[in-house]
Image 1 (cartoon, helix red, strand yellow):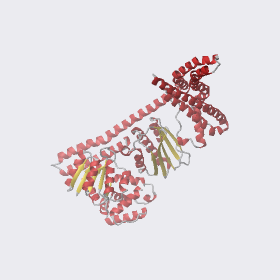
Image 2 (image 1 turned 135 degrees about the vertical axis):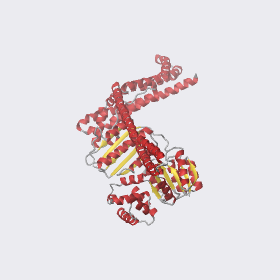
Image 3 (image 1 turned 45 degrees about the vertical axis):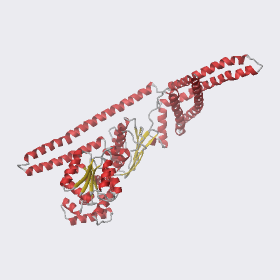
Image 4 (image 1 turned 90 degrees about the horizontal axis):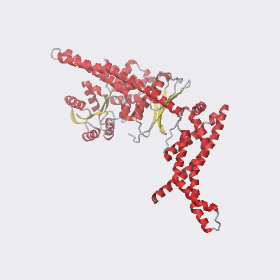
Length: 214
Length: 415
């Protein structure tokens, strides 16, 4: 799998290169600033890009803007965005392009190597990896809304895990229940929220995130 | 030499025009004075509250114009002595008019403006027309009198005297007209400049807001120090300890080392999340990344009430102002969530006439009373440092509207 990395902190950039190489990926370019990152993305068309939100030259949200621009030119380009802090606003902007193949995680998550690499793989396959903190902020924002209050505690847990981008098997493993139980919960959640059931995992995640972001 | 004379003549003509303009505005001033006095008399029967602000603002506008002219034309600086105006949103309706009148009439500067517009009329008619009269008289003496002397048979004394007098008044007019205007500016300064008492009031206001600001930032630093000390710092200590222990156990007891390392990782995660919370409280990253507009929109997405955000700023304010306004809006929205039981809220941020205003409203139950230690008082303190003001209208039954306003310049570039 070919990866492009955009991260200005040398320690973290080298760490990411080492980590992803150790897991059998090929880092075709690791750059420390926004303009060269955009060039690298368009030139290499990687299988997945790992991008820090805050990059030189202005150290604001350059990385995010590069990710969005690159995906305008290469629709569906898998991008995993990392940041020291997460904002539902940024998640919304990334999701607005509506192709999936998208990740938005706190930088802290790299310390859990297996899960981080799993997230990179999920995004590369066209799936979604949304940080639990984004999801919990979205859920707490809707906590007072009528449809969400109708969900049981378990259903809310399933909803949160689904919004993070986990497949049924992942949700089942996490909650220590069967996959069948998971899909039952999911059906009821969709019914209560008034969402159209979607067979495809990916579209299901996007539907949930769109609902929460609305 | 000739160039100097030409420049002087040009300047004198300009001063004549300016004098005429001042004399003309003094006539408007006397009219506004009469209207003001009449409408103040009508306060007793109520109509005055509706009528008074308009002529009073007119007088104030003229006075401000005089202050500007004094600076631009004569280099005499006259500071504006008025008290802080109540925010724009709070002066509508009958109650708002009463509040407006109270503010206008309670300000000694208003009364001095009125006195000025009365005295200014004769003074300006004299000083304003003096340059023109001197020049016209001079022209008569220098150009007309010789012609009369040469071409007419009558050699009256008047025309004989007219020539030297004309030369003299032309010389005076050319040399003294800027000084005459300056004289008027100094007269204006004497009546329209801030008095000692007003300056003293302003100084004590500034001293209070400064001591508030110093106190608040010292308390803030103490809180940050404590949070770092008890939180991230101690977590990093235990992190180092765990890793050190794991190093020693690695060979003899790999399982124990493994569990220590897992604990260390968790500890690092907690330290990070505490630091994140701390950073958010000092200067929200999204504010640095997106400015006020983006930050308020991001804020709106994290509040459990639907918030409509309208930000209309042609540029960016200075970073400290942005932060103060952001935290003030955050505080106001937190109040909405905590107290109002509102289902909808809105935030409006604009910049007009050198003032940035932020309005936070909701459709909740109203009845908010700014207490001495409440969130609203906190907003007030935060904005007072920038000469900002806060006003709350919250009738029982709602809606609650918090208006914040502070003077600030925007940088022109929109980034």
